[in-house]
Image (cartoon, rainbow, N blue to C red):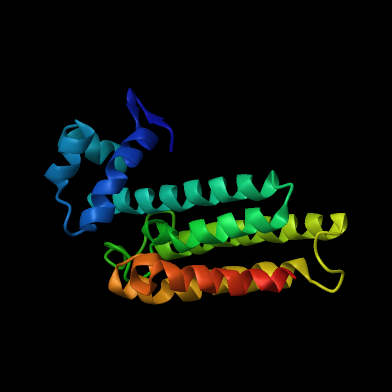
Length: 198
């Protein structure tokens, strides 16, 4: 991404993300985007190609930024359990960043010029978090913070699958997991998932 002449593309994507999450791709007009970005239509097309391509970039950037934040938490974790819980809770709340079918506007765009669909890019971001989670769990095991019989890779896969399960119905209904299931339910589910580390 980066800059396009005097136009900061990343900043433009950041400014438009909330608009897409609230209205979806089809619910957001080109004029809406031009107003938010303070750019003319020629400049917009030169920078992004189309509204749909711009939407793909917004989804990709949001997924990447969320993954980056979660990886940092795991890389700097000195206590594994609070860090894992924080990451799982953030992922459950991360429906806005997940362009799977049912999230706002997702499914309206089937791909982009790079050959990867928004859903494929979200999966790539999830795998990045899963890998960082496995690494953090492996380091915790080496410190003696996990029982010797625990497999960090299997645990990381289980925990990310658990999160995706909680989020699945929310994607169809377009509501975050906490609102759909209730805070108490999600907190109880998190507590059960965390027992996998015992």
